[in-house]
Image 1 (spheres, rainbow, N blue to C red):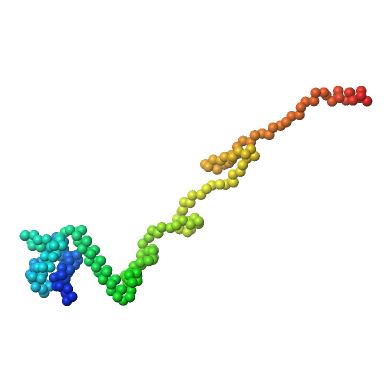
Image 2: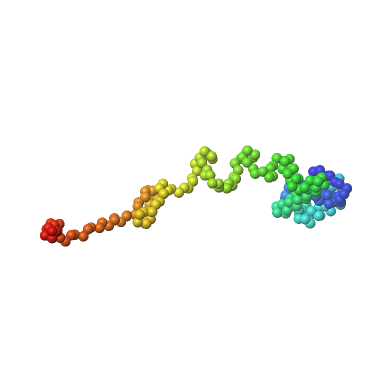
Length: 215
């Protein structure tokens, strides 16, 4: 591991951060034994007392714990490691935005620049062509029903069957039909009444004889 220090902060504080990154990156795997203070001090080219102070701080954070037989051991607490990883990542992200702001670049533009550099679209919805895999895109129904030609597959479109416009029968009774056969059956219409003329009491011959007598 590279032990690079700056002059703007205490060495022990930088040692803490470097060892933290070493734990998160796997240089010092979880559950493994840490090298001794003397070995670490030689690797970092620092005073053993300074390294001892940094390791004590890591124990206070719960990243290291001491065992009598194997010395200091790296924690196996995944939740603690995840929180540390997120905290350090947030620090780096804020450092990036602060650096971009010093150049007159706002957060939104800075995010767009990252998207451009990494090839990840930030405002354009993914498509089959852009990422090479099918993408589910919710669609809003329009007034035009989909067809086999438009999407390349059969489409079930519920429709209302009305082969004949319903009418009203002369008797003002509704027209009934069955949806299974789609055959319309009209309600029975009452037969019109036939009026018969009243019978004539006297035959025509008698009327003629009476008229002759009168004359």
